[in-house]
Image (cartoon, rainbow, N blue to C red):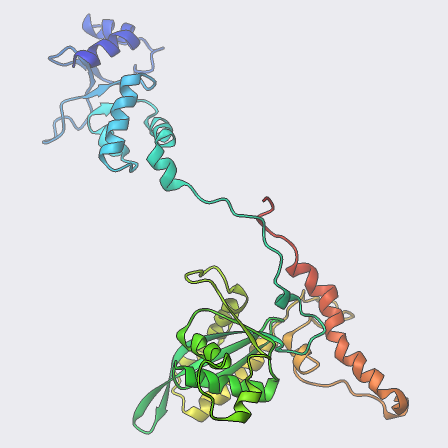
Length: 368
């Protein structure tokens, strides 16, 4: 109380003298709107309209904002409540003008608050990996693998679980295989089915799932292979498998985003649908076609412009699989292989011109 009284006599001398002599506070004072009085200790207090309510103190002590003792009091409450923004606890006993800016400054100077609110500075956005820039290569040369599910299928009276094995070409096309479990054996069989249709990839990317690790170990000949033909088809000399660092959930966005695209199409279908194994395979094939029809580049509304580039342009030659019809009278069969090369390279020429500038642009994290 001695400290409070001396602070008020120092900073609110005119107001303190006026109240002590029974006069009103001057209108130029910042406290003139308040109902001030002196308590039994001679400390200047404010009487609120709720002062007659039980449990409410008779008056709150008014203190100047920038005095050092006021800052010590606010810092005490700040530390008492574990560096939380408890303005209300201070207001129960004190009336301090501009309390929020004062507390904000105390939090700004608190070392513990600095450490808890600090955020790491993002490094310069890294260049794209080589697999994302594999132009003029066959589809599914560089792929990433992930699972989604489980999905429930009905077999008689039994309900069985199935998982979707999403194999993403890093040129943004997808292929979906249905696997019956999360084991290495099912992963190997799903990969074999994909290779039989799409060809052998050079590089595979994935997280650290035990089935993926087991498949990589199988390819490295750590397991005993009895089937020589399987060994030739799935030789580690042909496939390099790369894993994300453990607990690095921020990595793998190129295929995690496509998992979300598949779920966006899948969940409205499966909400009220019960699949058999055969109907699930059909639904996955249609879903694969739907996701591969999505545009990769800007969709122009001008009829004279070409249609937007889609993953199906790489796989099927057009967004819906229809091939251009050629006039047999205009075909020079002697040089027809040149025309085949032209159609094969058309996708990549458009990809380099239209999509490559978009994916190589640094949209954020511009400083080292």
